[in-house]
Image (cartoon, rainbow, N blue to C red; front, side, top):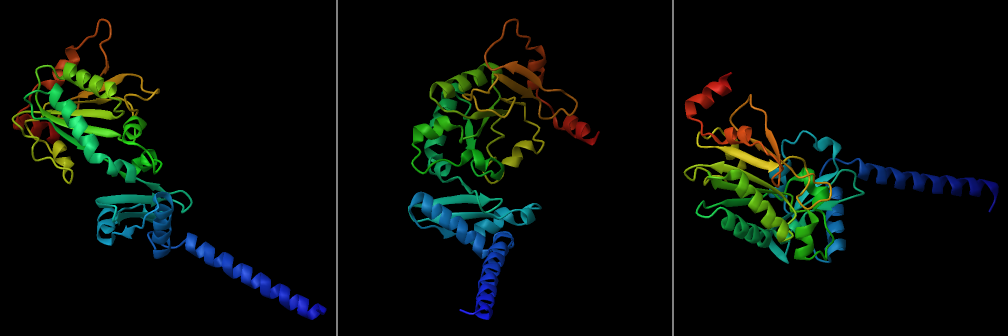
Length: 289
C-alpha cells in the first residue's frame, strides 16, 4: 500500500470512528423519554428479570407531563409484562448508565398491605384503620430497586417498603397506639416508616391512592399526625428512635418530638395539645392569617 492509500485509509477509519462517536453522543443527549432511551430501559428490565416488557405510553404521560425537571433526565417510564399483568412498573435513569425500578416492591405490595392492615386492625380495634403504601414515588426509586430474586421476607426487611400511611378515627391514646403499631411492625420484621393520621367520624374514608392529598385539604375533623422524625426506617441502624407529633392545622405550633419508646420523665403535655379537635371557623381564620 503506497503512502497515498495509507492516508486515505486512515482518514476513512477516523471518519467512521467520529461518526460512531457522534451517534453515541446523540443517543446520550437525545430528548427525555426518546425511543432510544425507552428501548434501553426495556433492555435493562429484560436482562434483569428475563422476561419481555411493554411500554405503557398513556400511563407514562400521566406521570411525566408537566414535570419541570424532565429536561435534565434520561428516562422515566411505566412498563408492563405478561407475568405480572396488573402492575405498572416504574423504570427511570438520570444518565442512561444506572437504571432504577420498583418491580419487587410492586410485586409484593398487596401481600405487604394485607400484613400491615392486620397489624393496624389489631392496634386500632374498632377504628376501621385504612392503610396506604406509597410505592411509586420517583424520589425513592434508588432505595426501592432490589435484586430480581428478592424474597418477600427480604423485601420487608430491606426498607424498600418506605412510607406506610395509616388513617384512623381519633384514639383515646394515640401515642401509646402508635408505639404499639411500631413495635408490632418491628417484631414482624417489617422495616418501614409508619405515619399515622388521626381523624374523627370516618372522615378519612374518601382518601385514596389517587387522591391522598385529601388528608391535607383542611378537613375540620382532622386531629393530628404521628410519624418518624427523620427519614430512616424503624429497623435501620441509623434510626435514632425519635418520633414527631404535629397538629396539621396549626401554622404556628412547633412539632413535639418524643422517643418511639417511653423515655424517663417524659413530658406529654405539649403532645396532648396536638390532638384537640378544631372547628371549621378556627381553621379558616388560621389559614387566612
